[in-house]
Amino acid sequence: MSVAYLIAAGPAEPYIQAVRSIAPEPAVVTISHVDLIEMHRDRQMYEWQVVARMPLG
Image 1 (cartoon, rainbow, N blue to C red):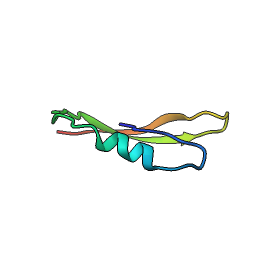
Image 2 (cartoon, rainbow, N blue to C red):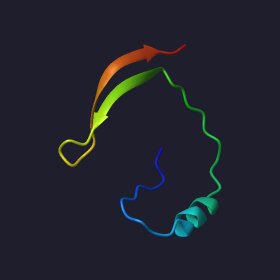
Image 3 (cartoon, rainbow, N blue to C red):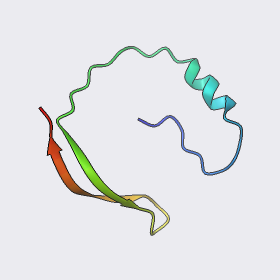
Image 4 (cartoon, rainbow, N blue to C red):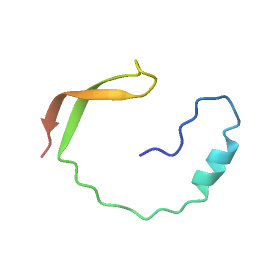
């Protein structure tokens, strides 16, 4: 989960206050596997490929 992504310097306070104002409900999540990825930004954008997958459970 991402809350924010910034690429420039600036104050963090507006983002901290925004997150503090949220009262999320608990969530149940089932995770069936984890992936090892190779990630790069060779073409000015994030790209990745799965190198290995490990099933859980």
